[in-house]
Structure formats: structure tokens, C-alpha cells
Length: 481
Image (cartoon, rainbow, N blue to C red; front, side, top):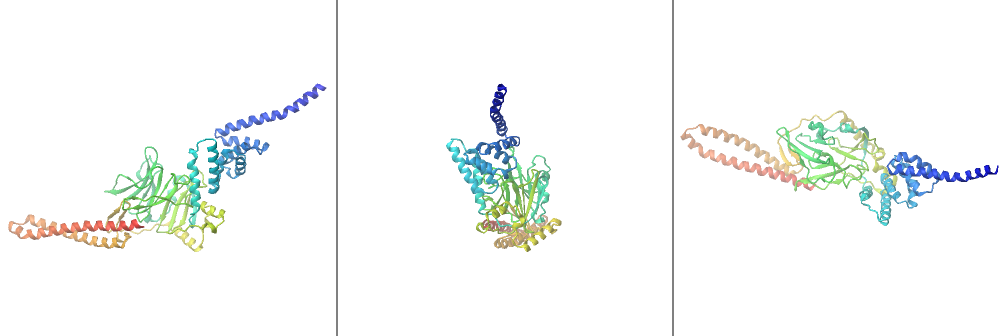
């Protein structure tokens, strides 16, 4: 009997040790899954382990990361904070990521600073994370300049067909994929913006390394010239989704380089006619850009509407199209007048109704959008002449000119062109008559023929000079904008 009692007592005393051994084995298995990036498989094990030992810093870190990486980031914060308090170094990195995703950029920067300090003490390299930390600093800067824009509509569409959702006026030209426009198959990411005149395109295409760049080409003799890379657009990153406004100078595109907050960010630049290249691009900031991909911003001046696409808060095969009320001047939200959560909401575009100030303006914009959805202007394209201004603009009517000086010069130029055409025709007729005249008649015609030739020659010089003066005057004016 005593032996049985001793065996029972021995068994009871071994149970905690056995449980501890099983727990350790489960933890090691979960760690292997964690280190292999199999967070979904590791998460249930860590969830059980943390219930047994809720104060363990490492368990809080592992479980917090599993929650973050499996789409449950809304639950990860207390676990990561506890791990950071227990001096688990990597918890600070994930806290920085969490705060960045939630537009708490000051907190994200602070976590990065702590993380880098701990890494420096441990003599570990930080090169792989510095670009990510820089984006937190960029986000903080952007939060000081959130634009006050009224967004009137948003709708989700298939990513592959998103261009079809843009309902633009004829003055905007057309948008199409590179493969559709050029009947190609090797440029699935390429986009083409053809201007209203249909004689110029701005497009993107990938090089042999797969990096996407921006180009422009003109239509000559019904054929597209070889495209030229746009000078002034950064080439160290992917640049795509081009759109040029009707002024021939204001240019929008998207890029994913160092100046981008997330994947693709939207940028704006202007063509500088003096050095024949685009100015340094500027990030459009929030709410147009986010930690996700934001691109294909188009301004429809005819309808005073703007459009852009984003994959923020979307499934992998979907994008959201936002439409906003376009005004030339975009004011900045006053930070001190809004609670922090409301400012973040405006930056994230979580509720478009929160961007509405004057209901009448919103209603008018919605009417314009409804009209754009059902019809496009049918005005016949007027071409009084064709005058090359710069690589980004060709004019066809006097109304195209933005400069009064250039418009006046262009009017004189047109008169000279007409005079030149008329006198050139007279000269051709006189030369024909001269070749058929007899010797006596030729002698009497010679002086007037030479005089007309000289007149036409001088007139040609005047036409060329006026054309150059007109072009220079217009480019000076565009360069001052």
C-alpha cells in the first residue's frame, strides 16, 4: 500500500515538470514557425502560451507580431507595448510600423529612435531600416500640410480595368494602357495619355531591367516618333501614370522612390521652357498620398473635377477611385482647429462627407460628375494653325496663348504668313511666265521679278523671326508660373 502511495506522490510531483517540458516544446515549435515567417501557424500556439505566462516579454512580442502580420494589427498594440517595456528590442520596430500605419508619425519616429539606440548598443547594423524610418519623418511632415479638398464620390473597381472608370471631358484627351494603345503585349504596367489634339502622347514603359520610366512622343506624318525620356523626372525609381494638363506644362505622375510615403505616391511638376526640362517634382501630400499605392491623378478643368486611384483599404485585385472638386488653389487644414483623430481621418480619407463644407458646392460638383458620366463635349476641334511652343505644348488657335504679348506677336505672325503665302504664289506665277516669255519680254520682267524675289525673301525672314519671338514670349510667360 505504501509503495502505491509513494508512486502516486511521485507522479503528482512530476506533473508540473512534464507540463513545463510540453510548454517548452510548444514554444520551440512556435518559434521555428515564427522565424520561418509562418505567422498564421505560430499564432495559436503563442496565444495559448501567453495565457499561461502573460508577463513574458518575448511571448508578448511573438504574439504581437503574429497578430500584426496576419491582419489583426488592431489587437497587437498592448502586446508589443508590453514587450517593449520588457526591453525586447524588436518590439520597438514593430511598434514603429504599427504607428506608421495608423498615421501616428510622431510615435513612430520615437519608436524608431529607441530601436536604433538599442541596435547601436548591441553593435547591430540599421541600414535595412533607415529608409522605413525616413518615411515616418516624411509622414510627420505631411500631416502639417493636409489639403482641404472636398471629395464628392468614391467607388471600388477592378484594378485591371480601373482606367475605364475615369469619365473625362474631351479636352482632357484619353487614357489607355500601353498594350492597348500600341497593340503590344510586353508592357502590362504602361499607361498612355494622349492629349486632346491627338498629336502628342505621354507614356510609361519598362526598360530591360523592369524599371518603369516616362516618355513623350509626337505624331508626324501619321506615325509616332521615337519616344524621348522626360528630362527632370527622377530615374532612380519607378515612374508611371502620366497626365499633362491642357496648359501643356503642369504634369502629374506617380513614383515609388525615396520621396514616396508608401508604394506609389502622386507628384506634380511643371515644364521649364528655358532649359527644356521639368522642374523638381513635388509630392502632392495628403490626402492624395498614403502608405499604400496612390496614382493616376487627372484634372478635368472642363468639369472642375479631379480623379485619382488608390489601393488603400482594398483587396489585392481592387482599387478605389476618388473624385474631388477641383480648384486651382488648395488650402491647408488648420491643425489647431481639428482634434487629432479628425485630422488623421481627413488625411486617411476615411469618410468623404467629412470633407464637405458647403453643401451647394458639393451638389454642383455632383451634377458635373453625373453629366460627365453620360456625355462628353462634342465641340469640333478648331485648327487655325500649328505652332510648336515646347516639348510639352503645340498651339492651334490664338485662344491657346496664355501670354498677351505672345498672342499679339502670334497675330502679326499670322498676317505675315498669309502675306508670304500670297506673294510666294505670285512669285511662282511670275517665274512660270518668265520661263515662257521671249527675250524682249524677259528683259522687261527681270527687274520686277528680282524685286518680288527680294520681297518674298525678306518676308520669309520676318515670318521666321516673328515665330521665334512668339514662342519665346509664351515660354517666358509659362516659366514664370
